[in-house]
Length: 366
Length: 148
Image (cartoon, rainbow over the protein chains, first blue to last red):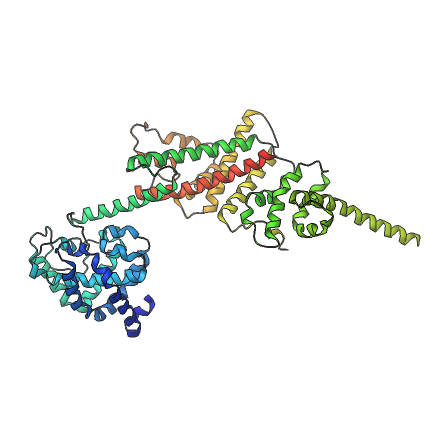
């Protein structure tokens, strides 16, 4: 879908997502009080405003979507970026909806900015103007980036409208602590949560903290027994202990392996086959092969002559054949079958020898 | 002939790691076949431990900072036998009380000294995953030995 949207000429393709977006509207409108909480919008008023904007969407979406593709692939990576952009949180599950939600939010934001003068609402949306620093770009979720990119692109494309709105922002909101006077072309607009500082430093800090908490959650899943522990310090202690215990286990196991005496018929293939029966590739009867492989170590300790080991090496190659040949084996259990097959294979070379010798003798004597 | 390939699928990361580890284990055993003196056993266990870490790191490759650090450490250790070790021993002289948790983690995870906290957590997660799979491999090998 994205690829179609890239070309502005693809109106047909655009039409489809547009309908999708419009269908998804109702979802969108629930969320975003994060936009509007600053304005104290009610949902109904949002919808009214949005309806007016929706007609403008087709015009703007074209240009917006050009810059989407950069951001959207990143969406999957930041399911929790919705914490910063609660409005977007919902949309992340489905990329299309997310894309549409981005689009919608973008338009929402622009529309909501229009009634600003009417409401006279002072808002933290003006945090948008604040974070005009590129360093924030790196910390913020791609969502913000795409919005910013879209902002920039659309600014360049549509010039006056956005700048007007931003100017209105700067004029109208006296509470905006740090508002830059003139809208610069490379603005970073960041959504700030209600009641939180909109300083670029604190925003960056917040992004960093959220990244860290996301990684801590992932670590919590990895380290067993960490579910009850909350708090960074306790978690870190657990992690440190776990890593130490794993390293100690490696040391202990290496000592154990060093003291063990290997069998003389140590065979790499048998070990791997035994250890990873799941990894045995599907080939000839896989189940049979793996179970027979599993029984090899048992066989190696039965009182069979050493000469059998060479046979055993070849055994795995044609277990099914030997199994088929072992119609004489009465037992159905695999180990016994295998035992029989080993004895059979032990006998086999001799029998072939014997037959050869016999044929020689008979040939000679004839 | 495809019969050899029937038995294990080496494209799996764990199987590759196990295979590498077993090969180095074989090499270590072949050097000195079953000596029982404690010093030799200790030396062999140290070699086996290094083989475990190297097989773990080689399977991961240079994708991760910790694997790169292990590979670098092993290569430099191979080059200069005693010098690197002595130098490494002298590095961490801070009393443990002053070390923050992040510093302790940096000590544990190879290559963690140069990482910021965020990347350190990521490396720790990957390191834990690989280390636990390596422990599983070693446990199963020891089990196979035990059954003999």
